[in-house]
Length: 213
Ligand SMILES: Nc1nc2c(ncn2[C@@H]2O[C@H](COP(=O)(O)OP(=O)(O)OP(=O)(O)O)[C@@H](O)[C@H]2O)c(=O)[nH]1
Ligand SMILES: [Mg+2]
Image (cartoon, rainbow, N blue to C red; front, side, top):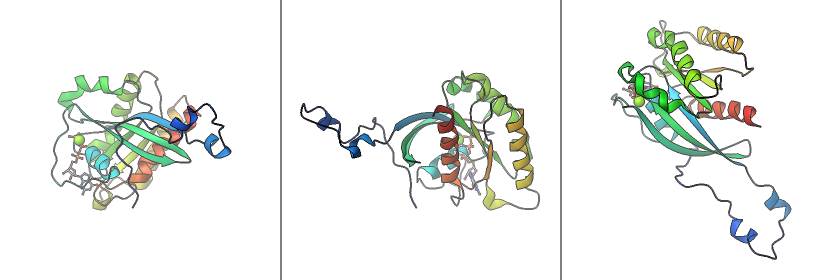
C-alpha cells in the first residue's frame, strides 16, 4: 500500500542548483516540472467520530483503539502525488468536543477544503454535520469551499447505521444548496481497516485543485 510521506521542509526540485549555472539550458524534461502545491485543510466533526484515526491511517500510522481526545487542534503535514502534481497537505485535525468550540474557529482561517466526518452508527453526529459545515464556511475567510462528507466506522456497519443512500442524498442536498458549483462527494470510510481513507484525502485535493486551476 502506498502512504504519503512526512515532509517538514519545502519541496525543492532536484535541478534547482543546476539551473543556477550560467551555461544551463533547460531541457524538455526539466520544463515538465511537477507543481508543488501546499493546501491547508481541516478535519472536522463531532468528538469521537474518528478524525484523528483517519488522519493517522492516511499517514500510515497504526490504529489506536482508545479515544484520546484531541485538545484544540493537531497539526501535521503529509505529501503525496495526485494527477501529476505534488501536494503537501497541512492538516488541521480539529477537536470535536463542544467545550472547545470557542477556540477552534481560529483554526479554520485560510483552509482550502475540509473533510467533514460523522460516525455512521451515531445519528447525532450525522445530524450535527450542517452545524460543522456552517461553522467552517463562516470562519475560513472565503465562504463556501470544497468539502468531502465522510461516514466513518464503516467496518461496524449494521442495520441501524446511517445508510449510504441517505448520506449520498444529503451530499447532493449540500451541493444544491451552495451558490458555488462544487461537487460534494460522500464516502463510507474506516480508519480501522483503511477503507476509502486514501480516496477521501485525494477526493478533497482533486476538488480543491479544480478551484485553483
Ligand atoms: N471500529 C472503528 N473504530 C474507530 C474508527 N475510527 C475511529 N475509531 C475509534 O473511535 C474512537 C475515537 O477516535 P478518534 O480518532 O480519537 O476520534 P476524534 O474524532 O479524533 O475525536 P476528538 O479528537 O475527541 O474530536 C477511538 O476509540 C477509535 O479507536 C473506525 O473506522 N472503526
Ligand atoms: Mg481527535
